[in-house]
Length: 492
Image 1 (tube, one colour):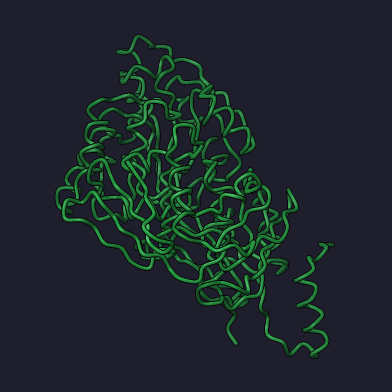
Image 2: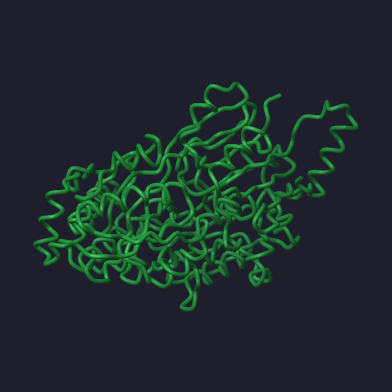
C-alpha cells in the first residue's frame, strides 16, 4: 500500500468530507526512468528534465509543446543590429521558492556558472558564444556574444539553462529550488517525487494543487499499474504491445506523437575496430531497422539514416545509404581485414527500446560475424561507464535533446567522433542567422555524419502517452524532455 504524502492525504480527506463531490485536483504521472539527481544544470540524464523542467525550474525562454521557443522569465528582448548583444527585460515580481526575489543578478550568476571554465553543465557548449553578461538594473540583463549565434534563444530554452538562486546551488541535487509553478515536496528514491503547487507563482497559477511523479521501469508493472488505475498517466509508455488494449478501453486515452529522440547504435569511434569507417559502414548494413521497430516497438517509430528528427523541416532522408544488406556488410568487414568478424560489447540501459532492441541488434550483428556481448546496465551505470568513462564498444540510447546534431562537433563526447570539417561547419552554423543558409548547413551536416557512419542510426522514438480519459493538457509531442504539470487539468 502506498503511503500518501501530506498534501495528497489532505486532498483525499477533503474529498471524503465533501461526500466525494470535490473535483480531482492532483495527478499521479508515471515515467520509466528515475533521475540520478534533480539538478538540470549538472547532469546529462534527460530524466532530470522530465521531473523538473517547467515544473520547478524555468529559464529565460522555454519550449512549448509544439517546439516553439517563447519568452518565460524574460518577457522580452532586443537584439543589436550586429547580432552580438541581447538585452533581456525580465518579468516582474518573480520569486524563488525560498521567498527570495529573482532578478538580473541571478540571471548573470546562472549564465556565468553554466559557461565557467570549471562548469559541470552537461551542455556547456550551449553557452560558448557568450563573452559577457552584465546587469543594467534589477530587471535588465545584457548578454554579449563573441560572434553572432542564431541559436541563442533556442539554447536558453534548454533545461540546462534554467535560472538559479546562488544560495541554493549546493543542494539542488536533492532539494531543488526554482521559480516554477510547483515546489519540490519529497523524493522517495526508487519510488516517486512529489510536487506541491507554488501559491506565490509569478505567472498563471496552475489548476492542479500537486503531482506525484512515479518511477516504473518494468513494462509489465507499468501495464498493471495503468490498468488498475493506480496512476493517472504514463509518459512514453514502455509496453507498446499493450497500446491496442488501452485504445479499446473507454477509461483511457492514447496519445501518439513524436519525440526528439534519435535512437542510435552508439559506437565508440576511438576504439578499434570502430576507428575504421569500413567497420562502421559494415555494421550499418547489418542492421534491419524495420525488424527492430516491429520487434522492439511494435511498429511505433520512424526509420532514420542520420542524427536528425524526421519531423524537422531540414531533415534529409538518408536511410537508403545504410540499407539492410548483410552481404555488403560481410564484404566490408573483409575489406577492413576482418573476414571472420570480431567481438565487442553492447551496453544496454533500462528503457524497453534499448533492452528489446538490443537483443534484435545483437542477433543481426552476429549474422555477419560481429559477436556483441550484451551487458545490461542501470541508468547510473550507463552514465558512468558509457557516457563518462567511454569504456564500451556499442550501446543503444535515444538522444532526446532538441536539435542536438552539434554533439558530433565535440571530440570528447562519448562516441569520440573527431572531424575538423564538421566542427567548422557547426561553428559557421552558430554564426548564421539566415534561415535558408542554416537549413543548407544542417542538411550538409546530416550528410557528413551519414557518410562517416559515425553511429548506427535506427529510428526516431515515438511518444506513446497513455492516460485516464479525463486528463487534459498532455503534450502530444516531446520537443524536449518534460512533464508540464502546470498544463494539466481534469475535465469536469
